[in-house]
Length: 306
Length: 157
Image 1 (cartoon, rainbow over the protein chains, first blue to last red):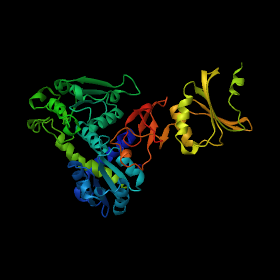
Image 2 (cartoon, rainbow over the protein chains, first blue to last red; image 1 turned 90 degrees about the horizontal axis):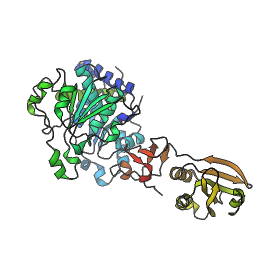
Image 3 (tube, chains in turn purple, green; image 1 turned 45 degrees about the vertical axis):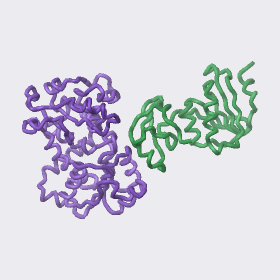
Image 4 (cartoon, rainbow over the protein chains, first blue to last red; image 1 turned 90 degrees about the vertical axis):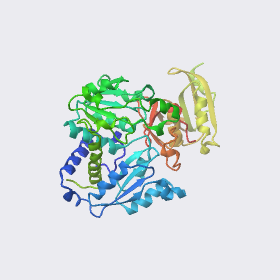
């Protein structure tokens, strides 16, 4: 078994399925049983940049498995602020804990940590590169809500250029034989061309449109994203596109009955609040699944089988 | 005049390294690579340009009066000018030879162009790239996972 979880690019389909199966087993387990699974084990949450839901869901996941958590939530609170190198920080913290969960703005940081440390390393986001635990929880949510992943029609809306969540999920869905993608983005935020290339020409269909209505009518999953202000070097450009797509309850009247609207959160205003009360809204259950998937990941990488 | 007679214009060596089948014009490039390495500072080098070649039409040729060419230099040459032949000469005869191809993994040579890549802040970490196409023209950083054209990356030396 892999020591670390660093990048979705490393995982074969059967390995992804193992995480999904593990999460199913975790969810089926009563809370009072789950809390007996990791007593005495310590997770180090090393967050070198701000994060709310990823950090809190990891911490919650570990506490609810009976383990405990040490860590920091900003690099200013660490010796890195005194000039310590990242690798030295890793070697220090590894002697205090059993598993390292790392979020860092530098791309490739988790890979480096995994090479340096004998402990399992979980990538909780490395810059614009990878965020595999988000992708796994997205896949888990899709399979749980729609009963399968294979063959679904999935639409992505918003920032398809910079969103690592989108990039990573598209790659993973391709492994699950999802062949039909609808991409809704303003011209400046289109999915980079190379994501549409595959070794099997013609197998995957990417339908690009600027009209969200097309996606709503045709798809099984509508994956919304926030236009990320922090990714724009020029804020004038951000202002031009920030409100390109706002999904409202009324727009969903044409949707398939089983359509699920997902979003990695936080949302700004791309999903109107009136969508929250429709049967289509899947984003808060998706966030809850984050704890379950992260429990599955912690258990798997700490060698617990269910 | 025959091709072999022309080659004799640069001195024959009893012990050394010959870099042969260099496409014409690329000999200078290899010389530039070699000159970047400290260990090559005192080595006697002969460079021949534009010899006739049955295989290439025209070719360049380099002779080095040294016994052993380091794997780092061979790796560097194989990336910048793939397809050349490197021969080890002993007693005026070819003792061994290898046609160098772009390696699948390139260690500690290329610098990642992504300013946000961890190898650009943790400078003590050796870089590692893997080729992503058969020709070895595109490489992927092991750390930030970005894919680059080989020619757009600078080297450490």
